[in-house]
Length: 61
Image (cartoon, rainbow, N blue to C red):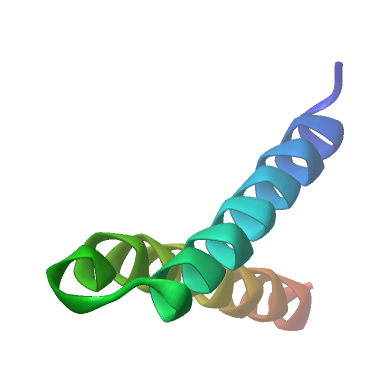
């Protein structure tokens, strides 16, 4: 498997987990809300950092 395919699979999994955690966090009540929202925030941050990295790499070429 090439690195591009592995990265696509990884990013797809991160995106799905982020959306599911965000939905679970928004529907939770009280203190059960924090862990899913933290996972969603970390997933969103990783997707943003990956996008910025790809854009910067594309500019350098």
